[in-house]
Length: 150
Image (cartoon, rainbow, N blue to C red; front, top):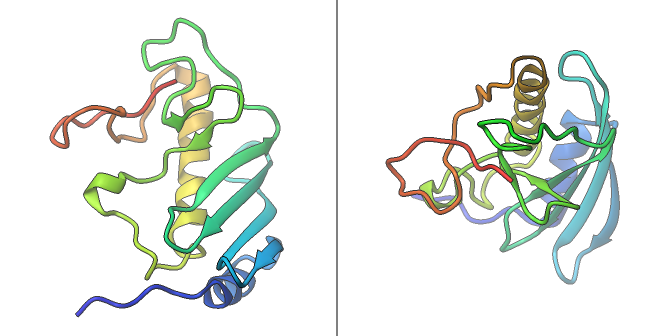
């Protein structure tokens, strides 16, 4: 039996319990949407993240600061594993076609830890030029495992 979608109030409560430094902003109970902003430090650097979510859509995560560094000419792409547009990328944290996330899951137990993992992979990529986060490029068939690049 599949669990039903969590309400925005349930998502807010889960975020407050697990990630109290992420402040809920722009909560709209009519559209069941919210925006959280908070800081994390996965390994070496601190990052300010924004998470936007509306029931019926996938969570979107952006790095507000510091600005993500691009490596032009890198074989993995100048900034791997993100969705466009280039001037406002969102992190690619899961594969929607593989149904790796659903609205029955909490953002607190999936999206935030996945964002921390993405940032750890990003920091390693900056040092080595190699993306270790796995995944698949946008437009690739499901069996082809590579990361999305931009």
